Image 1 (cartoon, one colour):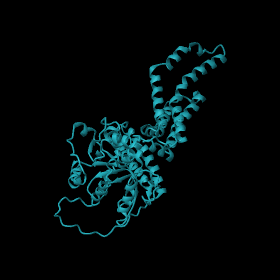
Image 2: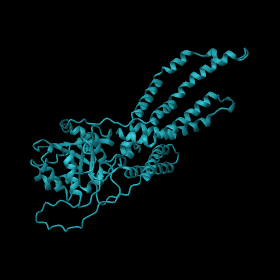
Image 3: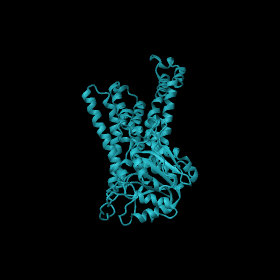
Amino acid sequence: MAELRTDSTAPPRPRRPPRQAAVIAQSERQGRRLSTAGWIALTLGAGGIGFAYGTASAWATWGIFAANALLVVAGIWAVLRGRMHLTPVLTSIQGLPADERIVVFLRSFKDDAGFSRVAARRWFRLLFTFMLPTPAHLRTEEDQVGRAFAPFGRMVALGSTTDRLPHLGAQRHYASDGTWWNEVVAALDRSALVVLAAGAGRNLGREVRELVRRDDPTRLVLLAVRDHDQYTRFRAALEGEFPKGLPDYPPKRIRHRLLRGRYVRAAIWFDRDWTPHWEMLDGRFPLLGVARRTQRALPRALQPVYRRAGVPARLKPRTRRPWAVKVSVLVIATFWLAPLTLPLLLAGLVLAVGDILPPEVPDLSRGFDPGALLSLYTSWPLLLWLLVVAVCGYRLWRGGPYAVMISRIQGVFFPVLLLAAVLGKLPAPGRVLFVAFVLLLLIVLSMPVAALLLVRRDVRDWVDSRL
């Protein structure tokens, strides 16, 4: 789309030939393969980075780090590309069910690249998060906007005629130059909310005039995106279309500089008489929640809009918990808690053997102190460890993105490290107790099983539904 012109004396633009609707070449099979391969690459790369710091050679350290970092980057690309193949495309906005509530997303196509940004690709993740990308870090800015306004309905938009795959976020319909306006009008007629990104585009002015003509400002939210200059140009070109104008971009405070949103910087909502209200979007803490800052900041900043419409700030997830998550919680708890039964097994073995040994063999059970065993199980380090395992298991049960990603990494790398350590210190084969061997086998196999279960597609979809 071309830039808005404020100079009335500028020469008219040459008419361009009508453009046809974009041809979208999606492949569900390729999308599933890319998504699965991407998450496997992310798991291996993020876990492998930890091995880089344990090598003796500096060159080996940097080599392992670089190889795994490239694996993480490739995994991010594959996951996002796979989702683009799998995201639904609307055949027509006019053909949506009559009783379905929708949110209309209007923007310049030039802003699609900015709305496609994800937290996983930001440079500071190398410094502060050790390149541990979770499903939350792979949510685009547009997807977060759609999730923030999900209580109002499904977010829909028109796609660019130059797209080959749909961007992630609003569900798109691809129209030609001859049909796009009819689709916009049909969407506005039934919209529960209209989200307009302030930008520069040939058709934004027409869309703004149509919104003002309908005179329903309570259903309009204006987003200030990218930077101060883009909003200033939009305001200079179209402020006169709004009955009470648009607010100035306020001076940047320290809080806004440190905790600002990535691409969506502010939101403007309107009273019934078109009085505008400016709300800056920022987080509460510098690093916490940065992956979903836009998704969380919008409902917090636009509380009057949600209350006025009578909708909750967030929809309750409806996707049922997959069986693979339940089994994973069980086997991971087995991995971490099963070793705690070893002292009990050894104590029981000593007592049992002491009863059947001949008199000339020393009785080891005479030195056994049950109080020492009790003090072991009631010590604060062990109780703290049980608390950590319980909290992590609860977060995994609830679909926490960090808990799921860490469990995948641990499922791949921890059994390898454990098996290597045990094999290096095993006593003579004749002294290996059968019970310990079975327990070790259970421990080693539980985490890989959990990792395989947690990478299943139904688990990924369930985690995404809870973000």
